[in-house]
Amino acid sequence: MAVEVLTFGCRLNAVESEVMKARAAEAGLEDAVLVNTCAVTSEAVRQARQAIRRARRENPEARIVVSGCAAQTDKYGFAGMNEVDLVLGNEEKLAADAYRAIPDFGVSATEKIRVNDIMSVRETAAHMIDGLEGRARAFVQIQNGCDHRCTFCIIPYGRGNSRSVPMGAAVEQVRRLVDNGYGEVVLTGVDITSYGADLPGAPTLGRLVRTILDRVPDLRRLRLSSIDSIEVDEPLMDAILHDRRLMPHLHLSLQAGDDMILKRMKRRHMRADAIEFCQTVRAGRPETVFGADLIAGFPTETDAMFENTLRLVGECGLTHLHVFPFSPRPGTPAARMPQVGRETVRERAARLRAAGEEALLRHLRAEVGHRRTLLVERDGLARTEQFTPVEIHGETSGAFVEAMISGHTDRNLIAEAA
Image (cartoon, rainbow, N blue to C red):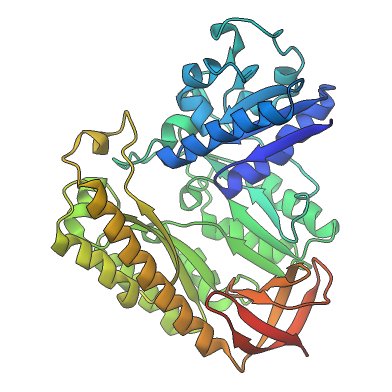
């Protein structure tokens, strides 16, 4: 078998999986499964372990290499799995040398581990890739790590402190992808609104976005991955409001809608900040659609506090929700706080998801009768400018199609090519 990559978690992991595959090929590795893990929830870690066991059953002779955030934060746990041949840290997984000398079968758990102190890493290089296999849009890593210490989050311990890709290298990677035929690019990282603080001259995300749009005129669409709205700088807000090539879909890292819970999470914004941001953007660019991450059942959350988060869906006009039932991560302050009962957590998550489904349905209904420019992901599925999924058939992956929205299901729009 060739090298197979199993990717869990965020868009940044998707980009890094392409780099891993290239570096493994450069090292001459064959007959291997690379598992790029996520540590954002206990469920993500459980799924990774399950996938590792399945990979061994299906590929008994293959080498299994585990990396990613869960491997970085629990290297001994993964090295202790009999199915695993090598554990690589988030820095090591991007280097060809790491794949050149996989230990022989039967070595001790300690000998399997190649994981450094991620907090000692101070720079992030641009990883030039030609695209992502099987994807109509391309992703460009502009930043890694996080300087914040939200009380529920283990990711800084898997990714290290915030560090940015130099602006020239990021622009060049976007240009390279456009030259390879990609019409839409997504800027991604762990905390992209912190971009540039560690670079000479401290360029901001807004400056980077403006530079990309100016210097890569053939780029049709630019998107941002999840952003922290409180950290949006003036040039970025100007681009959001006025540049039609920056897509009108913003995914916000909100997490909660109650001020006390936000303080206990150590977030940087308050409830009013989130509402004001959404109102300002929508007033200047009414077609903008918002997604958001929301956590249900954070420690100490009362019924009244949860209701504040639930109302935030309507007050911010959120459409695409990522709802996370709170999952205590060992080593984080929130894991030591008074916990909400698991049944209550599940019930609150269900209510948030139901509110999200109602909001999405209102959005779908409102789209019927509008003409949209769709990016086709594969036959049968495309996305509007607002990232809403659309059912459309007979079109080529990667193509932009002008279409009339003729109807909807409970989750997708239905369109006919104009």
